[in-house]
Amino acid sequence: MRVLMRRRAKRNDFKFRVARRSSLSSSTTNFKPFRPSYPINHTMSGKGKAGKSSSGKAGGEPGKSQSRSAKAGLQFPVGRVHRLLKKGNYAQRVGAGAPVYLAAVLEYLAAEILELAGNAARDNKKQRIVPRHLQLAIRNDEELNKLLGDVVISQGGVVPFINPELLPSKSSKSKKEGASQEV
Image (cartoon, rainbow, N blue to C red; front, side, top):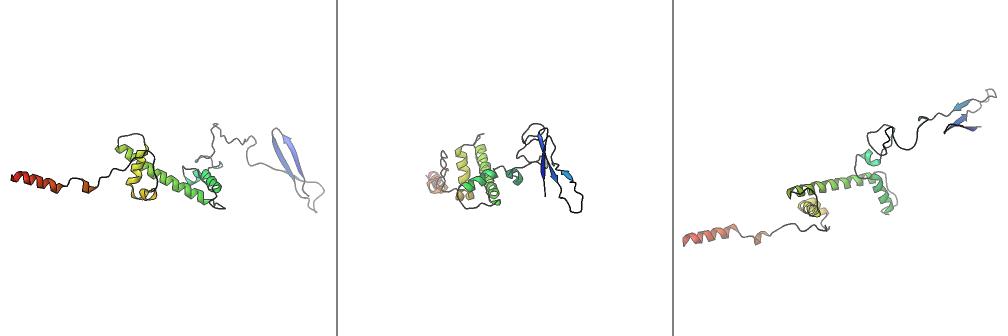
């Protein structure tokens, strides 16, 4: 038979457990107090000693909780991607690895597009990436153009292209120069 007793001490509750009586022991009971693994003055506010929030940050103390993005080493939110996958009715169940993988793929694509768009902005001597730079970055890259071929970027403009047949040919220039020299 187990009996649980509670005793209030300051603000904290301690549970005391009564050990089972063995048939061989005397009628007295042995009390073994429950000792929590955390300090008595521990608060569940999620704030450290300096008062800064440590929720989801990597590199903290070993006992601190980490976000799934921090565990995977990603910047994109794994929890939000998981919530959207569940809410979107794509499947009845969503595995634990699926949102991590999808967040990693999205982060890679975003980094790739932003790098190329930053190069396009620097080529135009601009400090800010505008939709035109995104358009140039995507359309000048073969793989991204194939992936985003049907996408229309608002305020993106068009990719400059002149058909070579419309350009004046060099052979016609040489004929004109030769004709002027003969006469």
